[in-house]
Image (cartoon, rainbow, N blue to C red; front, side, top):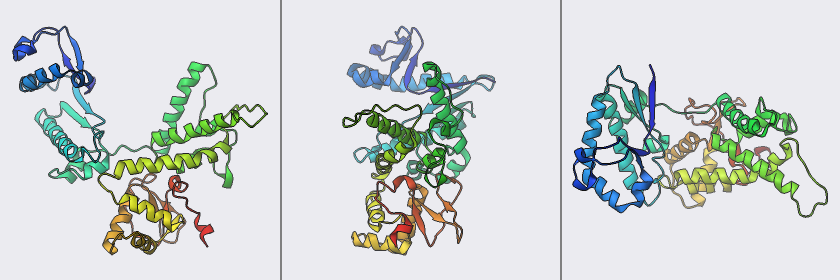
Length: 361
Protein backbone atom coordinates (compact mmCIF):
# COMPACT_ATOMS: atom_id res chain seq x y z
CA UNK A 1 0.00 0.00 0.00
CA UNK A 2 1.26 3.46 -0.86
CA UNK A 3 2.43 5.54 2.08
CA UNK A 4 2.40 9.34 2.28
CA UNK A 5 5.05 11.46 4.00
CA UNK A 6 4.46 15.06 5.06
CA UNK A 7 7.27 17.27 6.34
CA UNK A 8 5.59 19.47 8.95
CA UNK A 9 6.88 22.92 8.00
CA UNK A 10 3.76 24.58 6.58
CA UNK A 11 0.08 25.07 7.29
CA UNK A 12 -1.83 23.58 4.36
CA UNK A 13 -5.15 25.08 3.28
CA UNK A 14 -7.57 23.95 0.63
CA UNK A 15 -9.03 26.58 -1.67
CA UNK A 16 -12.01 28.51 -0.39
CA UNK A 17 -13.71 28.62 2.91
CA UNK A 18 -12.27 30.51 5.88
CA UNK A 19 -12.19 34.20 6.77
CA UNK A 20 -9.86 34.54 9.72
CA UNK A 21 -11.02 38.08 10.37
CA UNK A 22 -14.42 36.73 11.31
CA UNK A 23 -12.95 34.25 13.75
CA UNK A 24 -14.93 31.35 12.32
CA UNK A 25 -13.35 28.34 10.70
CA UNK A 26 -16.30 27.82 8.34
CA UNK A 27 -15.73 31.19 6.68
CA UNK A 28 -12.18 30.66 5.49
CA UNK A 29 -11.29 32.66 2.41
CA UNK A 30 -7.92 31.72 0.93
CA UNK A 31 -6.87 31.02 -2.63
CA UNK A 32 -5.26 27.70 -1.75
CA UNK A 33 -1.61 26.84 -1.26
CA UNK A 34 0.17 27.10 2.06
CA UNK A 35 1.35 29.47 4.76
CA UNK A 36 4.88 28.78 5.93
CA UNK A 37 6.12 29.19 9.49
CA UNK A 38 8.38 31.95 8.13
CA UNK A 39 5.28 33.83 6.96
CA UNK A 40 3.72 33.55 10.40
CA UNK A 41 6.91 34.66 12.13
CA UNK A 42 7.13 37.88 10.10
CA UNK A 43 3.43 38.80 10.05
CA UNK A 44 2.02 40.01 13.38
CA UNK A 45 -1.52 40.21 11.99
CA UNK A 46 -1.39 36.61 10.81
CA UNK A 47 -0.06 35.57 14.22
CA UNK A 48 -3.04 37.19 15.90
CA UNK A 49 -5.53 35.61 13.50
CA UNK A 50 -4.05 32.15 13.95
CA UNK A 51 -4.03 32.54 17.73
CA UNK A 52 -7.71 33.49 17.70
CA UNK A 53 -8.59 30.50 15.52
CA UNK A 54 -6.17 27.87 16.83
CA UNK A 55 -8.90 25.93 18.63
CA UNK A 56 -11.01 25.80 15.45
CA UNK A 57 -7.97 24.76 13.41
CA UNK A 58 -7.24 21.92 15.83
CA UNK A 59 -10.84 20.74 15.67
CA UNK A 60 -10.76 20.87 11.88
CA UNK A 61 -7.48 18.92 11.68
CA UNK A 62 -8.82 16.35 14.14
CA UNK A 63 -12.00 15.84 12.11
CA UNK A 64 -9.95 15.29 8.94
CA UNK A 65 -7.63 12.80 10.61
CA UNK A 66 -10.55 10.86 12.06
CA UNK A 67 -11.64 10.12 8.50
CA UNK A 68 -8.39 8.25 7.86
CA UNK A 69 -9.15 4.53 7.66
CA UNK A 70 -6.96 1.43 7.29
CA UNK A 71 -7.81 1.55 3.56
CA UNK A 72 -6.23 5.01 3.23
CA UNK A 73 -2.51 5.60 2.82
CA UNK A 74 -0.71 5.93 6.14
CA UNK A 75 0.14 9.48 7.10
CA UNK A 76 3.55 10.23 8.59
CA UNK A 77 3.95 13.69 10.15
CA UNK A 78 7.66 14.34 10.68
CA UNK A 79 9.06 16.81 13.21
CA UNK A 80 12.71 17.66 12.62
CA UNK A 81 15.13 20.29 13.99
CA UNK A 82 13.15 20.53 17.23
CA UNK A 83 16.38 21.04 19.20
CA UNK A 84 17.36 24.35 17.59
CA UNK A 85 16.33 26.30 20.71
CA UNK A 86 18.25 23.92 22.97
CA UNK A 87 20.49 26.59 24.46
CA UNK A 88 21.11 28.18 27.85
CA UNK A 89 18.47 30.85 27.18
CA UNK A 90 15.59 28.60 26.06
CA UNK A 91 16.55 25.32 27.72
CA UNK A 92 13.71 25.13 30.25
CA UNK A 93 10.96 26.15 27.84
CA UNK A 94 12.31 23.93 25.05
CA UNK A 95 12.42 20.96 27.40
CA UNK A 96 8.71 21.39 28.20
CA UNK A 97 7.71 21.86 24.56
CA UNK A 98 9.68 18.82 23.34
CA UNK A 99 8.32 16.70 26.19
CA UNK A 100 4.79 17.68 25.18
CA UNK A 101 5.51 16.92 21.54
CA UNK A 102 6.84 13.41 22.28
CA UNK A 103 3.92 12.62 24.60
CA UNK A 104 1.38 13.95 22.09
CA UNK A 105 2.96 11.93 19.29
CA UNK A 106 2.61 8.75 21.34
CA UNK A 107 -1.01 9.60 22.14
CA UNK A 108 -1.88 10.39 18.50
CA UNK A 109 -0.35 7.13 17.29
CA UNK A 110 -2.63 5.25 19.67
CA UNK A 111 -5.68 7.43 18.99
CA UNK A 112 -5.58 6.86 15.23
CA UNK A 113 -4.52 3.22 15.54
CA UNK A 114 -1.27 3.73 13.71
CA UNK A 115 -2.84 5.20 10.58
CA UNK A 116 -1.47 8.61 11.55
CA UNK A 117 2.12 8.38 12.77
CA UNK A 118 3.95 11.44 14.09
CA UNK A 119 7.71 10.91 13.94
CA UNK A 120 9.98 13.08 16.09
CA UNK A 121 13.65 13.23 15.15
CA UNK A 122 15.51 13.94 18.36
CA UNK A 123 19.02 13.66 19.74
CA UNK A 124 19.28 10.75 22.15
CA UNK A 125 20.87 12.89 24.87
CA UNK A 126 17.88 15.26 24.79
CA UNK A 127 15.37 12.42 25.06
CA UNK A 128 17.22 11.16 28.15
CA UNK A 129 16.50 14.36 30.12
CA UNK A 130 12.83 14.74 29.19
CA UNK A 131 10.30 14.20 31.99
CA UNK A 132 8.17 11.49 30.37
CA UNK A 133 6.30 8.72 32.15
CA UNK A 134 7.61 5.27 31.15
CA UNK A 135 10.30 6.89 29.00
CA UNK A 136 12.33 3.68 28.88
CA UNK A 137 9.28 1.70 27.69
CA UNK A 138 8.53 4.40 25.13
CA UNK A 139 12.11 4.22 23.85
CA UNK A 140 11.96 0.43 23.49
CA UNK A 141 8.46 0.21 22.00
CA UNK A 142 8.36 3.28 19.77
CA UNK A 143 11.94 4.48 19.38
CA UNK A 144 14.73 3.59 17.00
CA UNK A 145 18.36 4.72 17.12
CA UNK A 146 19.47 6.05 13.74
CA UNK A 147 23.09 5.02 13.28
CA UNK A 148 25.40 5.18 10.31
CA UNK A 149 27.63 2.20 9.61
CA UNK A 150 30.74 1.92 7.47
CA UNK A 151 28.82 0.82 4.37
CA UNK A 152 25.89 3.23 4.69
CA UNK A 153 28.20 6.18 5.35
CA UNK A 154 30.47 5.28 2.42
CA UNK A 155 27.50 4.72 0.12
CA UNK A 156 26.10 8.13 1.03
CA UNK A 157 29.39 9.90 0.26
CA UNK A 158 29.90 7.97 -3.00
CA UNK A 159 26.37 8.75 -4.15
CA UNK A 160 26.80 12.42 -3.32
CA UNK A 161 30.17 12.66 -5.09
CA UNK A 162 28.97 10.75 -8.17
CA UNK A 163 25.94 13.00 -8.46
CA UNK A 164 28.20 16.00 -9.02
CA UNK A 165 30.66 13.94 -11.08
CA UNK A 166 27.87 13.21 -13.54
CA UNK A 167 26.97 16.89 -13.75
CA UNK A 168 30.62 17.81 -14.41
CA UNK A 169 31.03 14.89 -16.83
CA UNK A 170 33.97 13.40 -14.95
CA UNK A 171 34.64 9.82 -13.93
CA UNK A 172 32.59 8.38 -11.10
CA UNK A 173 34.15 6.60 -8.14
CA UNK A 174 33.46 3.17 -6.68
CA UNK A 175 34.94 3.67 -3.21
CA UNK A 176 36.32 6.42 -0.98
CA UNK A 177 39.93 5.28 -1.36
CA UNK A 178 39.85 5.90 -5.12
CA UNK A 179 39.48 9.63 -4.40
CA UNK A 180 43.08 9.79 -3.15
CA UNK A 181 46.47 9.71 -4.83
CA UNK A 182 47.75 6.87 -2.65
CA UNK A 183 46.09 3.69 -1.41
CA UNK A 184 47.95 3.65 1.90
CA UNK A 185 48.97 6.18 4.51
CA UNK A 186 51.40 5.90 7.41
CA UNK A 187 51.27 2.61 9.28
CA UNK A 188 49.59 1.15 6.18
CA UNK A 189 46.15 2.58 6.95
CA UNK A 190 43.88 3.23 3.98
CA UNK A 191 42.59 6.82 3.57
CA UNK A 192 39.03 5.65 4.25
CA UNK A 193 39.91 3.89 7.51
CA UNK A 194 42.05 6.83 8.64
CA UNK A 195 39.17 9.26 8.04
CA UNK A 196 36.48 7.06 9.58
CA UNK A 197 38.49 6.57 12.78
CA UNK A 198 38.47 10.33 13.26
CA UNK A 199 34.71 10.70 12.84
CA UNK A 200 31.82 9.87 15.13
CA UNK A 201 30.38 7.92 12.16
CA UNK A 202 28.19 10.85 11.15
CA UNK A 203 27.91 12.26 7.60
CA UNK A 204 28.68 15.80 8.75
CA UNK A 205 31.96 14.62 10.29
CA UNK A 206 33.16 12.96 7.10
CA UNK A 207 32.02 15.90 4.99
CA UNK A 208 33.83 18.29 7.34
CA UNK A 209 37.19 16.55 7.24
CA UNK A 210 37.12 15.96 3.46
CA UNK A 211 36.16 19.59 2.98
CA UNK A 212 39.20 20.62 4.98
CA UNK A 213 41.41 18.34 2.89
CA UNK A 214 40.18 20.12 -0.25
CA UNK A 215 40.73 23.53 1.36
CA UNK A 216 44.28 22.55 2.33
CA UNK A 217 44.99 21.55 -1.26
CA UNK A 218 43.59 24.85 -2.56
CA UNK A 219 45.87 26.77 -0.20
CA UNK A 220 48.85 24.74 -1.39
CA UNK A 221 47.99 25.48 -5.03
CA UNK A 222 47.61 29.21 -4.21
CA UNK A 223 50.76 29.48 -2.09
CA UNK A 224 51.93 33.11 -2.59
CA UNK A 225 55.57 32.17 -1.92
CA UNK A 226 55.81 29.32 -4.42
CA UNK A 227 56.89 29.84 -8.02
CA UNK A 228 55.83 26.37 -9.06
CA UNK A 229 52.36 25.69 -10.38
CA UNK A 230 50.69 22.95 -8.36
CA UNK A 231 47.90 20.84 -9.83
CA UNK A 232 46.13 17.77 -8.51
CA UNK A 233 44.38 14.95 -10.32
CA UNK A 234 43.12 13.39 -7.08
CA UNK A 235 42.84 14.29 -3.42
CA UNK A 236 46.26 14.35 -1.79
CA UNK A 237 46.88 11.97 1.10
CA UNK A 238 49.40 14.38 2.65
CA UNK A 239 46.69 17.03 2.87
CA UNK A 240 44.71 14.76 5.20
CA UNK A 241 47.39 15.29 7.83
CA UNK A 242 47.31 19.05 7.23
CA UNK A 243 43.53 19.09 7.63
CA UNK A 244 43.45 17.00 10.79
CA UNK A 245 44.09 19.77 13.33
CA UNK A 246 41.37 22.07 12.02
CA UNK A 247 38.90 19.23 11.84
CA UNK A 248 39.75 18.16 15.39
CA UNK A 249 38.99 21.67 16.69
CA UNK A 250 35.68 21.60 14.82
CA UNK A 251 34.72 18.20 16.30
CA UNK A 252 35.52 19.35 19.83
CA UNK A 253 33.35 22.45 19.38
CA UNK A 254 30.51 20.32 17.98
CA UNK A 255 30.50 18.21 21.14
CA UNK A 256 30.69 21.27 23.39
CA UNK A 257 27.77 22.87 21.55
CA UNK A 258 25.69 19.72 22.03
CA UNK A 259 26.38 19.32 25.75
CA UNK A 260 27.42 22.57 27.41
CA UNK A 261 23.81 23.47 28.29
CA UNK A 262 22.66 20.28 30.02
CA UNK A 263 26.10 19.01 31.05
CA UNK A 264 28.31 22.02 31.84
CA UNK A 265 30.93 19.76 33.45
CA UNK A 266 31.99 18.71 29.96
CA UNK A 267 34.25 21.77 29.82
CA UNK A 268 36.17 20.59 32.92
CA UNK A 269 36.25 17.04 31.57
CA UNK A 270 37.87 18.21 28.35
CA UNK A 271 40.34 20.32 30.34
CA UNK A 272 41.21 17.32 32.53
CA UNK A 273 41.81 15.11 29.49
CA UNK A 274 43.98 17.79 27.93
CA UNK A 275 46.00 18.37 31.11
CA UNK A 276 46.69 14.64 31.33
CA UNK A 277 48.58 15.13 28.02
CA UNK A 278 48.30 11.49 26.88
CA UNK A 279 45.78 9.76 24.66
CA UNK A 280 45.54 6.93 27.21
CA UNK A 281 44.63 7.38 30.85
CA UNK A 282 43.25 5.61 33.91
CA UNK A 283 40.33 6.55 36.14
CA UNK A 284 42.86 7.54 38.84
CA UNK A 285 44.56 9.95 36.45
CA UNK A 286 41.24 11.52 35.48
CA UNK A 287 40.38 11.92 39.17
CA UNK A 288 43.70 13.63 39.84
CA UNK A 289 43.33 16.06 36.93
CA UNK A 290 39.77 17.00 37.95
CA UNK A 291 40.90 17.64 41.53
CA UNK A 292 43.65 19.89 40.16
CA UNK A 293 40.86 21.87 38.51
CA UNK A 294 39.05 22.11 41.88
CA UNK A 295 36.32 19.73 40.77
CA UNK A 296 35.34 17.60 43.75
CA UNK A 297 34.70 13.98 42.75
CA UNK A 298 34.30 10.63 44.41
CA UNK A 299 34.42 7.13 42.94
CA UNK A 300 30.75 7.26 41.91
CA UNK A 301 31.23 10.62 40.21
CA UNK A 302 34.21 9.33 38.23
CA UNK A 303 32.31 6.28 36.99
CA UNK A 304 29.44 8.52 35.88
CA UNK A 305 31.85 10.88 34.12
CA UNK A 306 33.56 7.98 32.35
CA UNK A 307 30.20 6.52 31.35
CA UNK A 308 29.12 9.89 29.96
CA UNK A 309 32.36 10.28 27.99
CA UNK A 310 32.02 6.75 26.61
CA UNK A 311 28.34 7.11 25.69
CA UNK A 312 29.31 10.11 23.57
CA UNK A 313 32.33 8.40 22.02
CA UNK A 314 34.74 10.92 23.51
CA UNK A 315 36.62 7.99 25.00
CA UNK A 316 36.80 4.24 24.48
CA UNK A 317 38.10 1.41 26.63
CA UNK A 318 40.19 -1.68 26.14
CA UNK A 319 38.58 -5.07 26.51
CA UNK A 320 40.68 -6.98 29.06
CA UNK A 321 44.21 -7.81 27.94
CA UNK A 322 43.29 -7.60 24.26
CA UNK A 323 44.38 -4.82 21.92
CA UNK A 324 40.79 -4.16 20.93
CA UNK A 325 39.40 -0.72 21.76
CA UNK A 326 35.66 -0.14 21.93
CA UNK A 327 34.09 3.23 21.06
CA UNK A 328 30.32 3.72 21.13
CA UNK A 329 30.21 5.36 17.69
CA UNK A 330 31.83 2.30 16.09
CA UNK A 331 30.04 -0.33 18.20
CA UNK A 332 26.60 1.10 19.15
CA UNK A 333 25.48 -1.96 21.12
CA UNK A 334 28.53 -1.92 23.38
CA UNK A 335 27.71 -0.95 26.95
CA UNK A 336 30.08 0.80 29.32
CA UNK A 337 32.56 -1.32 31.30
CA UNK A 338 34.85 -0.10 34.06
CA UNK A 339 38.34 -0.59 32.65
CA UNK A 340 41.95 -0.22 33.72
CA UNK A 341 42.72 1.94 30.72
CA UNK A 342 40.80 4.40 28.53
CA UNK A 343 41.67 6.18 25.31
CA UNK A 344 40.56 9.51 23.82
CA UNK A 345 38.85 9.37 20.42
CA UNK A 346 41.24 9.86 17.49
CA UNK A 347 39.27 12.83 16.20
CA UNK A 348 39.90 14.82 19.40
CA UNK A 349 43.62 14.11 19.84
CA UNK A 350 44.83 17.20 17.94
CA UNK A 351 42.32 19.58 19.54
CA UNK A 352 43.38 18.44 23.01
CA UNK A 353 47.07 18.46 22.06
CA UNK A 354 47.60 14.89 23.26
CA UNK A 355 50.60 12.65 22.75
CA UNK A 356 50.33 9.03 21.79
CA UNK A 357 50.64 6.77 24.82
CA UNK A 358 53.97 5.36 23.65
CA UNK A 359 55.41 8.90 23.67
CA UNK A 360 54.35 9.65 27.24
CA UNK A 361 57.12 7.57 28.84
